[in-house]
Structure formats: structure tokens, C-alpha cells
Amino acid sequence: MASGDETRVAIVGGGVAGIACAQSLVANGFGKRVDIYDQGSRGPGGRTSSSRPVEVNGETMAFDHGAQFFTADDPKFKAVCEELKAKGYVARWDGVFGTLNAFDGVFIPKRRVETAGPPRRDFFKLLTADEVLVGVPTNQALCEGLRALAGDDVTAHWHTTVTGLDRDASGKTWSVSGVNKRRLDEGQAGSKEKRLSGRNAAVVVCDVMAARKGTPGTCAVTGLPDSGDAANAWAAFANPKVPERVGLFSCMLAFDAAAPKPEFDAAVVTGSDVINLLVRDSSKPGRVKRKDGLERWVAVTTIEYAERTIASAPLTVDGEYNPQTAEYFANIEPGIVNEARRILGVACGDDDGEYPAPHHAKCQRWGAAYHSGAVGEGVPGGVCFFDMDAGFGMAGDFVQGPGVEAAWLSGEAAGRATVR
Ligand SMILES: Cc1cc2nc3c(=O)[nH]c(=O)nc-3n(C[C@H](O)[C@H](O)[C@H](O)COP(=O)(O)OP(=O)(O)OC[C@H]3O[C@@H](n4cnc5c(N)ncnc54)[C@H](O)[C@@H]3O)c2cc1C
Image (cartoon, rainbow, N blue to C red; front, side, top):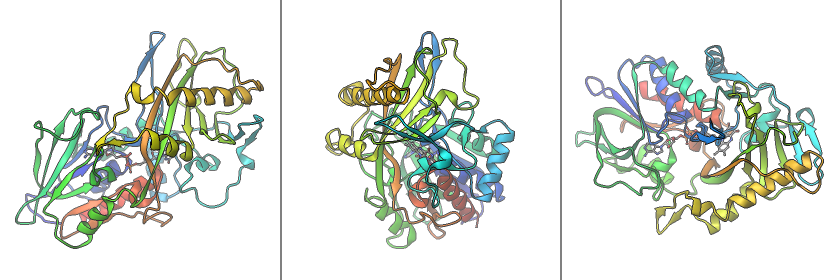
């Protein structure tokens, strides 16, 4: 990497990978300014962020609507999680976990769930781990904690979409341009685009969305060499099948305090062609206790359901991002809510599925919940792309494989590669 004045580093994306990259730069003695840009309006998190708070019965509530829980196997990530636990950002979740049959309501506790092999693609198997972790008071606290560990050399720019990365003619530095406060449904970059920073010795892109057209994060890169690792990786990732994205829907539900209580806190659901996971969000440690006692649940759909649904309600229309409006969900939400009620009813011994209607229900679409077939999937240690000559890197779960821990490992590796 170039030395001298041009030693700033810009990171695109403030999810687990982007913040791990920043933290790793600092921990490995980078000692100069690091800027993280993320288009999210409510701080760091990406797919670990919590939902926008909603008011129900005069009290606000938020849900973990993306990643539900995580584990730490790698010694470095484990050490970071221990530090975050000590500082109160992360906690161990000793819930009742297992598998639920959606036909007969039989619940098998986790000790009898098949545990072979490391949980990679199917991160719901993480529930069988010895220690299951969550952020406190929501999963977003994981990234807030990582951000706090990174310290003051890291400047965060939330609600800032990077739309252009330009390498100057000398090939030594990058400038970053983008748009402040753009709503995800506002379409692509327009006249409000401005230069955000210059003289960056390196840029690290921590979301594959940036490389792809028709996403809320689409970003133009100019000045990459015609060939080489960086140019090849950037060109390859423009293809939505490299690695293949896997979509999911999550549905946030709040039920009356008097509603029947299933015996589990999180269950992988079998036998439903709509729902794959049910999580009692309000049973996680450190969650806000409500006066009205509403129970918060999150249902995550099956991959097949998401594929079918996205086929008829696509992510893009005429090459433009298709926003997640009430109209978009009008024909989707009732089916997910009704199936969640049916399964909860069966789980509570009511075969007619007469589980009460929720006080609140809202769906979220995840066009790329995770990626299947990433080059680093299953590879021990951190995997990232970093082209020293170009000062250009890429990291995230699309490089390392699905899950919070994989994203952290990839980001951490990118920070180390950049300092080198
Ligand atoms: C419904 C669901 C359930 C899941 N459950 C689990 C689970 O239980 N356990 C588990 O371990 N994992 C789970 N995952 C997967 C896990 O959330 C991800 O693997 C991980 O969070 C990915 O982190 P990341 O940093 O690579 O990407 P992200 O979290 O996606 O971060 C990338 C960030 O970059 C931002 N960005 C993109 N382009 C731009 C741009 N041009 N300018 C500015 N910002 C930009 C994005 O907005 C985003 O905030 C789940 C995911 C989903 C969706």
C-alpha cells in the first residue's frame, strides 16, 4: 500500500465484515484515518441490524429481522466476542432450541438434533452449538460493539451510499463519491452525488451488492487495471450467480401476552413449505420488557418459498430496484402470517391452528440473505481479496461463506492484508 499522505482507507459497507476490517486495520497498527460508509440510516449492522422501531400500544418495539443468532468457533473471533460480552454488547442465549414438526407439533430438543459437520450454509444448525450468542439489547449491538472496539481512528458515515470509486491517473490513490441520506427506494444515483473523500491509499468493498447492477448499493469503479486479481474479482462478482445469492423473507410478529406459549424459544421447522425457522425474539437475553407483555416472534421462510415468491414479485423491474412497499407485500404477508399462526397453534396442541391474530406483523425481504458457493466456504481462517498493486479489496460473507462469523473472519483478513 502507498505510504505518505495517502494512507487513508475507505471501507464500503458497515456490516460485520466492514467493521471487522476497520477494527483489524486499527488492531494491526494502521494508525491513520479509516472511513466506513454504509447506506443504512440507523448505524452499523447490515444484515445483523434490528428493524426500524414501531409503536404498538404506545410503546416502541424492534426485532432482530436478519441474522437471528451466531456462534464463535475461531479463536480470534471468540476472543472478540468475550470482550464484547464483558462490555455488555453480546450475551450467551441459553434458550430452549430444537426442531419442530409443523404437522404434529412434536418438538425435539437440540441435544437430539443431528449435529454432524460445521454449520456453514444452514446457519440454523448453529442452534446446536454449545454456546449460542446474540447482541444486547438487539443483534445490532454486535456491530455497535465492534465499532466501539475499533476506536476513534475510525470515522463512520451512516446513511451514505457510495456510488463511485475512482482510482486517479497516478494509480496511487482512490477517491470516493456518493449520496447522503438516500432512501433505498429512491432509485440509483442522481444529481445529489458528491465527492466524499480523496487520497485513499486503499478501498475495501464489503458487500457484493456494490458490484451488481440494479441493487441499492450499485457502485461504479473506474481506474482498475485491465487485468489482475482486483479487476478479475470485480468483474466476476458482477454476475449474480458468482456466488449465487439466496433470498429469504423474515416476518416480525407480536402476539398478545395471553396467547398460548410453545415450549421452545427457537425451532427449526420441518414439514412447512413456507417457514423454516421460528424464533421467540422476546426471549433473548437483555431484551426490553414491555408493560403489555407482548411476545415478539420472528419467522424466517424456507429458501424454496422465497424463490417462488421472488419469481413472481422480483427484486428488480426493468433493471431498477423493486422497493419493499406495502403494495409489494399485500399478497405475500398474509400467507406467511397465517402459516406462522398455524404452526404456533399446532405447537401449542391446537390442531385447528386457531392461534390468535398478531397485534403487529411486518415482513422484510432479503434478496441476498446469504450466498451459496463462495470461494472461501469451509476454508479455515479468513479469506478475502486484496490486490496490493491496485489498493483494492473485497470482503464479506460473499467471499467467505454465509454467517456472522464468516463475515467477521473475511473482514478481519482484509484489514490485515491492507496493512501489509
Ligand atoms: C433473514 C436472515 C437470517 C440470518 N440468520 C443468520 C443466523 O442466524 N446466523 C448467522 O450467523 N447468520 C445469519 N444470517 C446471515 C448473516 O446475517 C450474514 O452472513 C452476515 O451478517 C453478512 O455480513 P456482511 O458484513 O458480509 O454483509 P452485510 O451485513 O450485508 O453488510 C454489508 C453492508 O454494506 C452496505 N452497502 C452495500 N453497498 C453499499 C454502498 N454502495 N454504499 C454504502 N453501503 C453499502 C449494506 O447496506 C450493508 O449494510 C442471516 C441473514 C438473513 C438475511
